[in-house]
Length: 266
Image (cartoon, rainbow, N blue to C red; front, side, top):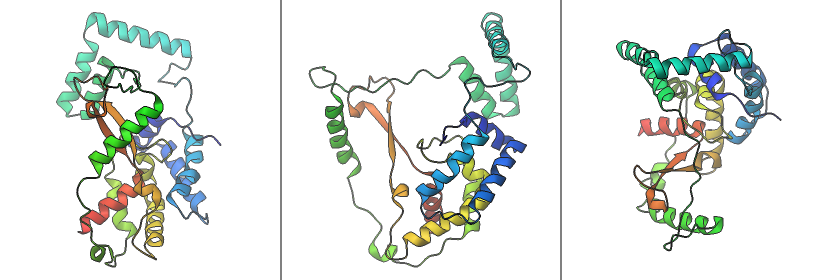
């Protein structure tokens, strides 16, 4: 089953409220009617193929009237040449975005001036400067994370967790309206743009998942409890040891929506 999709195209469609986004939302709504989905992971697996059909990841994207790949490449090369040697295009775009207060436009200019570099693989080294093996890296990261994330005690007592509560789909939709469509998430989970676009169909499912998990004892679906760590180099560091790296935890958007709402009730 195809599950890869064009994230940039999805974000553009949701941001613009295009017909493409509406068609995707309508199919998601129809597919959920009568479907048996009882876990967050099952929801991700159900919607991902629909997302891939509506926003397939293509080798060459079509921009404007440049429908032919070669024509698009020539157009891009000419644009870059003019920006580099005439020095006007990029700066005019930046100035116009600044005057409009268009933060997204400014970031687009920044991406043109400093495009993303290829991801560098993290390679830890031992005290002797030797590159660690995969098994050694895992051991070092595990020990470091235990020391970093196991400090302190959970402030949630059994009395607090035992308090009755009821989630309301309408309240969750309010949080989903405020989602940023540019947040990163684990690759196997739905991006925030989908949650924001399809909030009326997905919010009741979040209520269903939470109610089911809370029936016997205070708990949460495993997908909501897990994080996928991404390690980024700290500024000015080479990333040769865990303390020279900054951990970023990526989580399922559905779980974050429920957590944010519960936190607002405390």
